[in-house]
Image (cartoon, rainbow, N blue to C red):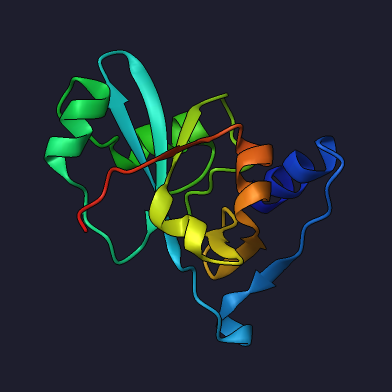
Amino acid sequence: MSIGNVVQDFLNKGLECSIVNSFIDIKTCGSQTLAFKIKEKIILIVTDKDKEISVGKFLHYFKASPSMLSKNETREITGHPIGCLSPFGLKNHLKVYIDVSLKRNDYISVCAGMKNFVINVTPGEMIEVTGGEWIDIWEN
């Protein structure tokens, strides 16, 4: 189960986490996690759900055009379904990039690997748990 993997990811790093049912709590996932293939490498990018990718910035950073994984590839590689993709509790170790626009928030609301479930993390926790890197990749 994806939620169990997300919780275990935090526990393995000595951190606590609280997963919230967003349907009941009326909180929504304020970010999105997208999976891309760059040549033979798979990466995840987490950003504000209302932002759009800048193809120019993507080309600048990765020297390749953005190519998103299919629904089946996403589940097979990450262990999470599209629409619930989380940068935590991944089936395989993947490089995670987090858009700098999320730094301005005290908490980042991230999908927890299952529909209607979110986890709220600080920007620092996001970096600590994912081993991620800040990147400016979305349209302003």
